[in-house]
Image 1 (cartoon, rainbow, N blue to C red):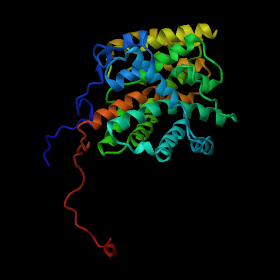
Image 2: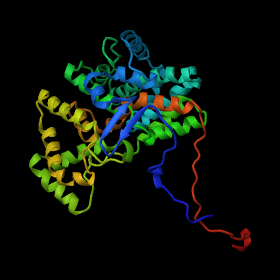
Image 3: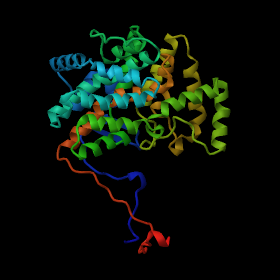
Image 4: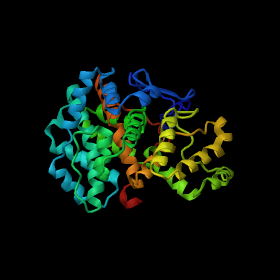
Length: 377
């Protein structure tokens, strides 16, 4: 075997396919979905509109959006067997429960076996509505309560908060959750989306792909940053302690959670939208401390920005969830709720001109070994 083969560990810098879904400029800190700036979408759009854009490739007309929203609402149902599975696994981590429930849906819903593009769209739409139901139902059941029925008068994000907490959110709180879902809806060939495409490459169905995506997202190196940020904030305790905390971390060559990104060298373009939302939500709920600590950390980290250690979206996301009183082990499932449309269109794009994804590994082990019979070992 040639010794001049270049190994790109983690497939870093490798382009494996062309895509029309999202464009990430890591050096400039820019992100767009289908050619639309994430800033325009976060400021003016809704999650439902962005989901339509991702899946269909264009912004919907008013009638198209109305029909899409109606379809999402009509999909807010789960088989009773799923509630039974949630009850049986209620003491597990929410990501394990969610993955198990989605996998079970593949067996319970015959339409899940449809591997046509139309089938992927229909199943992706259904999973977009069902996954927040599973997460909310698990939170209720593990706390000894009955699941909260979906409210068909509420939009996607507001209904999610209603099912989770059993109370209607304020308009501002619902809008911030909506923006959170928009910001997490799609992000190129990240680990979970790549996993989903590998699964579809074998001609498996969408439920199989989403199940593997959920399994990949459950790893802390991919989906766990928001939870780690809030653990850091709790450790810091007050804004006055932030500078010393950062100084000690840097002196020990330890990372400061929420800074730096595998793709972005500039600030994550999604972060600014969560930053202002956290500030407003903290004021609304009479608890500005989380935002103040986060901003003190940002100020302390400013000297390291030139090294690419800029704030990322997860730095602020955890504070939103904390202000809502959401347990930390639900942070990654919330990430998954927003990402379903992105996984869906990634899988559809893979389906078009599908090919088995099969990279190589360079063998570096022993060679020409002589087999020794058992009695002679």
